[in-house]
Amino acid sequence: MESPENTAVSERTILDDDDDLSHHEADKEAQILSLEEEWAPPSSNSHTSDANQGSQELQSPKLTAKQKQKLERKAKYKKSSKSKSSGQPKPTGFEDFYCEPVLTPEGYNVERSIYDSDRPAIFRIQEALNRYQQKRRLLTERMQVFSQYLRYGGVDVCAKMFGGVSEQELKAMDKEGIITARSQTDISVDKMKLDVDFELVAKSFLSFYFPDYTSPASLEMIKMGTNTIRNWLNYLLYHEVLPEYADNIRAARKYCDLAEKQLWDNIRLLSVAPGDFNKASSVLFGGYYHGLPTTAQGEQPGAWGGEKFENMPMTADIAKKVVLFALACSGSDEQASRYVELSNAGQLSANPIRDIDGFEVIDILLPNAGVREFYNREAPDLNPVGKVRGKAWRNPSEPAIDLAPGETLPNIDKLEFEFFVEERLLQYIYLGMKIVTTVWELNCGIFFYDEIMTAYCSFYTTLLNDLMLGWKNPRELKRVKDDQGRDESVGEESALEKGE
Image: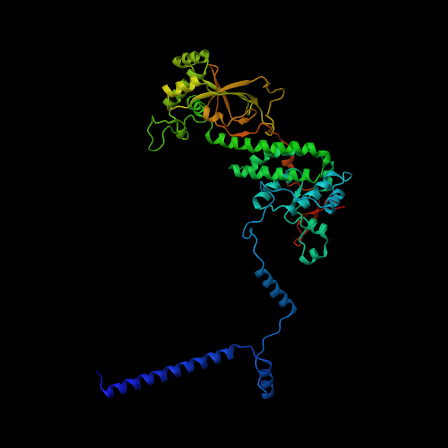
């Protein structure tokens, strides 16, 4: 039990605590009131009283009309719901699903006037190029390929073809003027004397210029080139830019489809060529691979496993095995017996065929089931061999062969060959393929080809257009004296460059 004194003390303590709490609550309320007064916007009464008292307070600056419009746009943007494509890259116009928008009656009438058949073809092509660049997003790599194609076809391409145009100048222009000012292409008037042939340019560019000068290394790069040209040709057909050349444009579009497959097959063939038999023959009979190191560091001399060892050096023993099995399975009895007879006598020899650049494929023979079974049973480490027949070919883009006075080139029209080629290479070979290589002939009637330099499409076509790339009109030179009295040549622009 507690004493009365203790009870009084405790009651006094409790009362004191209540007083402290009430004081704390009062202080808190006062702080809240002071904060509200500090952050509350000043009322008109307070301004009046302060003015009467002569005190000056800072007032919020008045917004200009432009600032109010900006705030309204921000508020409107926050209220508007974001589209589902927010954050996605903008379409380029080269997607597989892309479709040309439907023309309005007004747009159709405009196009019929600018693409009128009475206008010269090059003017209509230039108008189409101006609008095509506006409707497509030509990213860097795609623009490079498209620029090469246009230059090869005689179109001048420059980043700022018509010079820099300021924003003020653009605002003063109409729609047609803006399209022309932003164009990166131009077709000079002197091109009017040239023939318009979309098919010929597409064939030559895709089969000759594009693989040699661009050197696409992947299927994606090839598709980017072919899709870009196909997209441009489709644009010409859809907008009826050149109705008199519609069939010619459709023919050019077919070569885009064909080039996409054949260019990729060419690249894959070069990655595995020349094949086991032809490499073995080159090792044995003085070709490109003869005399190369036969063993790599850490390699066993007798190790050979076909496809997975295709890049390994080939020893003479392995080369003999590859050749003998190919002759036994796919060669004729006459070839096999003659080869063995000359080999035993030490009289086998091979000579390269002169004055040709390679061969064109005219027939492909796959190995039959008996050949595959024999290889699997007797030589599982080797690849079954089929055949490729070809005819001699000279590259029309190469310089003419230097001949002595009175000398003529031999006729190669009836010169044909038959090569032994592994089945895994035959999947990349097609009829009409042009293969640049050295062809050798053994004295027993067997042919083999050496290292493959390159392979061309079946529609390989060469033009002289690439020789005109970077051409500049000649200028008249005049001799003038410089500051030190020395002669120097100064060129004058020709009338054509001046635009006269």
